[in-house]
Length: 602
Image (cartoon, rainbow, N blue to C red; front, side, top):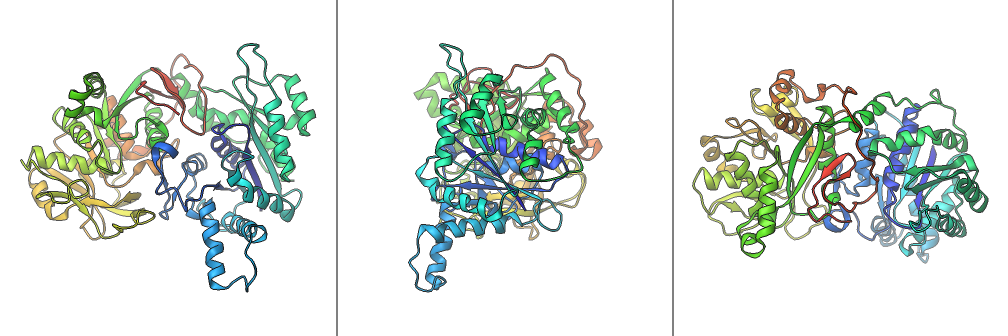
């Protein structure tokens, strides 16, 4: 097994996750099998209980792991199915060591950070790196490890020590360290400054690790004199210094690495010989080119609770982008805070209320993603009502499905107090109830999590056709509450069709309005399985409906048959690629997605 470690210096948010994903992609394109590990130094056992406003979305894996959003980048770029063990946290490591101590595994020894914590980290890495994640038997050829945080952080110290020991343990030729650092350009003098990177590398070396490759983030390509200076002071060969400058879309980052022969430098350090010395990225390049040339837009209103941070809905944004590019449309996302649609906002902040409704009414389609808690729920209900009554294409995910059902019960069935027991435990018409697969007292890891099977009820529904007329589909879940099965007959009699259910028939997975051009809501999270070039069928359906192409798509029987071509016109302006959210203003572009300036910030 060969290991590639990606670390970061100077500041956070440089794009380590995208860089690690891109490194994995170019190695895979060279014919190697690749797996990934993300190390998060926080004390939480996993990301499940962390606020999406502070940390970004909680990404869910097939096995139910609630992990950092960077694992979503790995899965999308490399088309893998990772496991919860591919995300290492301080909480997991310390818990494992404490469990061993309680069992007496250490035979009375004093348990210390070195060697017990550091040994556990190394053993975890070795164990996780051998788990097959690409659908093939046996371990991968290369494991790309991303160390979260910044070199010098207190919480990272045990991991730095463990990785230093690990590099000597696996031996020279089996370990490659890539350090991502910042080379800022001072606007006053316009000069690229190397001192921050010099200090970062000096700090890294003082902790026992020396970089083999420097990946320097900058607004523009590094000057040759700057590379010479970095090589001299950081003791890194000049050809191993790579510039990660700003590009037009995130799919260009692997191409940037390829063009600077980053793969050759990595293969040389790891003593690897590959059949494909030039990464095979023809389809990837075509997709990046097409994304830059698109001019016709599709405008999607995203009605959410966490709209102050775009990373809170990162996988939803990526799924929309995958579908939009497949249909040759430039994606424009209008962020609509759910609270601002409510009557209370009309009294408290009329301007925000008017702006929210203007964005909603101006959209080609409406998407209501998941969320927890009662804040903004009434706004999501109003969004579903507007989409249903005005025949606007609608996709509801998780809570977005529940609010659509509540709205239908209130407006069509006349049950004015219909609600979820999550928001009103005493409601007389509980449309959504707590289902018994989770815990009401513990929050972490207690929901219905991971991949579950949904069985289609018949073959005439839009969702069945979008998925290619299969009898069932496996999608990922993350929820505690579900549609009350006792109310299903009443809802269906009124015209709401539950076209997907679990194997028991008691859990409602997909709901549709057949009288509507496109009104589909699902309990699962289809965004987690969307991939570049293989968009999620339901997202494809939403974009197709918004573009007037739904009938043609349904006739094909599968949204995954959309072909990628490279037509289009003028290129779009460049943008930064970041690991975390970017400050957005009116008309800002993030990963090829135009967004409105609705208070988004890093």
